[in-house]
Length: 363
Ligand SMILES: [Zn+2]
Ligand SMILES: [Zn+2]
Ligand SMILES: [Zn+2]
Image (cartoon, rainbow, N blue to C red; front, side, top):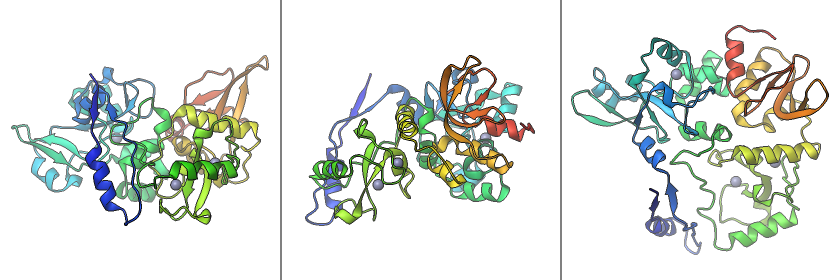
């Protein structure tokens, strides 16, 4: 069963919200929701064996999910009034979840893919309502999310935590985008935007003005960005051509979803075009996928040198096996979005290097 949603009313509303004389359009193709996504949005009771194995992030059938405890028997009213008094939701396999897993107390959790920060909880007596639960701090630390291994930093990340942003930082790790997040990039543009966009990109030869990657062979990964954020201001000085990766790293652009396959194409082109050389740690973060930033940051924090980005790893016969996202050749450590086995190397997936180092390992 597939459901489609009629968005014509939304389009009418959009027209009302823009200044006079500006046309509004939204792609009118219906949004298709998969039944699994619908089930997850209502909160699905889950047992540990239902979850996808082998990741630091929590995944269900290829979708990124959150885990929370629905039963708030003794704290229901307090949690409804103030989400901080409710039970925390989990975004990663933190030490709290690990100990639950060991004690086999896992059946109490529900999984959800909602990104609005609301979680349906109940009082055990038949009452239920949405509460604004807060993120688990151990989870933040577990992923070193935005530098959360530092206690002060963790507190400030906790206070400003946004689920939208979190999901999009890890979009490349999952096969399916969560319900509630979709590319909002075609709302609020003027009617002839497609032509403006095409001629702007043509004039720039599909070269990203930030990282310099030439996307003539993958034009769909080439965007036009409005510097002042106003999408109907299409004056030449307000428009700039960016690759999708540089575009999503602009302020207030965390809504741009990028699939793993697309990120791989961008990295491959950058590599072929000699653009993956870095001089500073800032360069390292600028040209890598945000999902591996926690792992890179912990290496920086421990005093390891800058990694090589997009390194080709060879086996003992000198044959190229794979290209990894980031690597430290002197200690034969690498991070990659997908698990790969390369003789003589330890290749970690997202969040696993954080776990290894936090457990006291030195390379
Ligand atoms: Zn947690
Ligand atoms: Zn770029
Ligand atoms: Zn933009």
